[in-house]
View 1: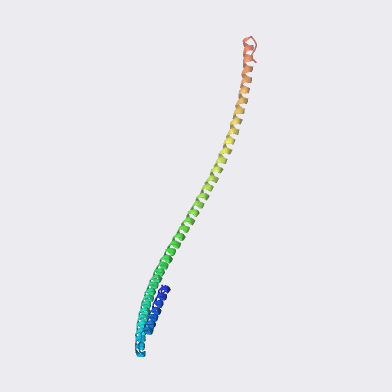
View 2: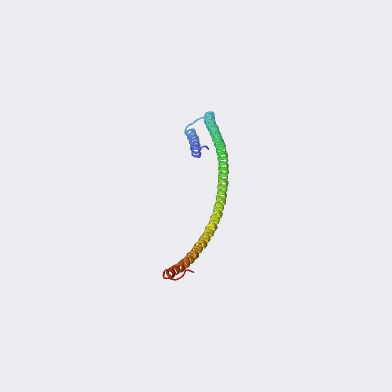
Length: 175
C-alpha cells in the first residue's frame, strides 16, 4: 500500500500554514533578530521531528506491507504447489481411466469377434441343416412319388383282378 497522497498534501498544507502563522507572528511583534532565529530554530526543529516521525511511520508501514506481500507470496506458492499436485493426481487418474477404457474397448472387440465367429458357425450349421432338409424333402418327394406309382400299379392290378374275378364268377376260365 502506498502512502496516501491526500494525507501528504494535507500535512504539507498544515506545515505551510504553521510557517505562515509564524511569519505573521514575527511581523506583528517587535522581536529581535536573536528571538526570530530562536523561534525559527524551534520551528525547524519541530518540523524536523514531525518529518522524522512521519518518515519512521512510513518505514514501519512499508515494512508491514513488505511482510504482507511476503505472506501473499507464500500463500500463492503454497496454492501453486497444491494446484500442481492436484493436476498431477488428475493426470494420473485420467491416464488410468484411459487405460481402463482401452482395455474395455479391447474386451468388447474380442467379444464381438467371438460372437461374429459363433454367428458364422451357426449360419454354417443352419446352411447344413437347410441342405439336409432339402435332401430329406427330395427323398420324401421321391418316396411319395414311388408310393403313388406303387398305388397306381396296385390299383391297376387290383382292377385287373376284379375284372378277372368277375369274369371267373360269370363262368369264364382263369388265365
